[in-house]
Image (cartoon, rainbow, N blue to C red; front, side, top):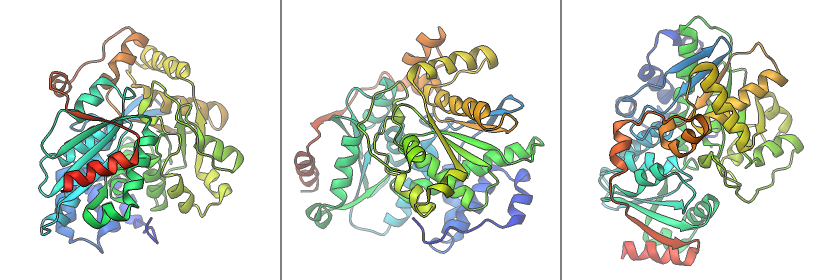
Length: 407
């Protein structure tokens, strides 16, 4: 975490409704990174990253959807992964040593990172994903690229994958022989660009004549997306509060309820990218609020939902709004509905929709009885050859593999 989180000036918020996404993102990035990078480099990286928008879709007067799935891999992590890849390429351009990026993924991180770093000189990416616990399309997206991208299919959970990555970062022999980095949300360079679309959401709301501070409901797994939102709020973004909408992996929900954080064993759900029993970014959120639960509760609500509640919300959104949710966005809208029932029915809520529903067609179709439209770039990936190394969740084996790569 940064020692200090800078405030955006008031004039920025006064004019935010007339700025486009790239202008908003450049202003935020310059505020956060201006002491570390030349301004022209920051603006170039932002421009290259944001080749797509994050539109705000109105459901009704009190509910909006922030669509974050218009990037190359149709998931919200495209913003963070593309920004980070270009940032790391800038730092690597004069280095003779290859950097190995280790990534644990519960689904969308892997494909976004693979796409963002594909073909970047001087950087190899090793992706670890839990066997049988991500969707077919997600698996195809992260296992079919080749070149500088290697996928490892781990016999275990996302937490097992994450533990292997974390152990690698503290292993003296590995760090002596290799340059290691991460593209998970444990790396702050992934979170900084994820603040951009929260500012853009408020700008779009203001542009439509809504000037009140909204509530934002975030489908929450490893809590990187939520952490980015809370950082944006600390920078002055006018948001009333956040909702951490969880599936049955509810360690954050219980932490807010009883004040004691307890890691859990991961439970498998239909919103698989949120299947994280011990989210890394809990410590970021704790640090941001000085480990003071009363202060955190002023800015954050959290509820967890069963799979059947998720399915019910998918049906409800389609019937009421003719809107097709993926299961993660459905959990987010469950959180919005709960807030309106329990806290304040008059508040405007922006629900974050993190992935295109076609990525979860095997879940969406049985629930809604329709096939979500399949974008052409997803259709193509289904016919590519899977390339993955299968491995147990044993650090010794993983370490030997990494050392062998570097030999």
